[in-house]
Image 1 (tube, helix red, strand yellow):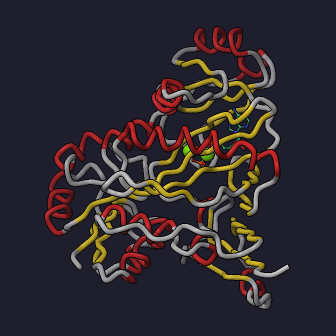
Image 2: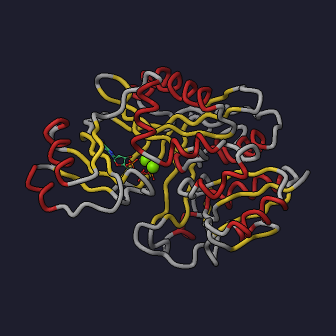
Length: 347
Ligand code: ATP
Ligand code: MG
Ligand code: MG
């Protein structure tokens, strides 16, 4: 029992809230959004900016366990929660900054795409000289779903770019065979469990589809990728679900980024695994034993529903399809509105 507080009010918070409620917890959502889709399914909600110290203190005082579903939270405001929040603030700070994250993974034996930090037009020219083209310029902080990224195929492209505010990273475009993610859960006692790795397909920087089993090139690289992910989690003293995204290349796995939270590429675990990423995250942060992460079907496909979802009700005609709608009122282009998971149990 008790109250679980979740910082962030999007669909990940909503799915965490459902899992927590099932385990008998009360859920309290803290979100700056007035129409939060997580608050809608929670027992309680605080609607306030992440920068409101009084609201944050009140929220924290009302919760027994604290976690987050959104990594772009100003951590300075959370310092008073340092010994009560899981995953911890060091994990959050590392994952918030692409430069920190890449250097951290590199130090633990991971291999990111070649990269250079960029804070000025001169830096960008130097970065391109060192890393080469084609490449991608990314804001170091606050990006998601491919936002805050610019593809650069020539020096000329670079000259046309107006640098955004704040630090950026320029990285070489990786010629990958496939993309995949490693999702693990680490319990309070250091126990680690992995879900099977899905093969992920992105369009325009947004995840479109995750499929299991992954293809042969991914399967061959999962062990090395898991080793790195487990090392990252152990080094951070991580508790909860953690995701690392990788490119499968001819030279082995290339580390893309980490998310200190449950992940879109793990939505298939709701129906497709013995214990979902959401339930295991709640179990971990609440100090409970972890559930079995085994995959339950022979083949699984999770498709995101992005933008217009007029066709979604029709998906229910497929008895193998599990439809999840997030309850967002406005279907903006590129906005994740829901997902559908299909499972095939037999040959
Ligand atoms: P997320 O929503 O996963 O947090 P994000 O905005 O942080 O996304 P990235 O993961 O950096 O963005 O990039 C989104 C997608 O763009 C990647 O999954 C990949 O398809 C493509 N991409 C990003 N960086 C590279 C790269 N260096 N080489 C090749 N493709 C890349
Ligand atoms: Mg990201
Ligand atoms: Mg990503």
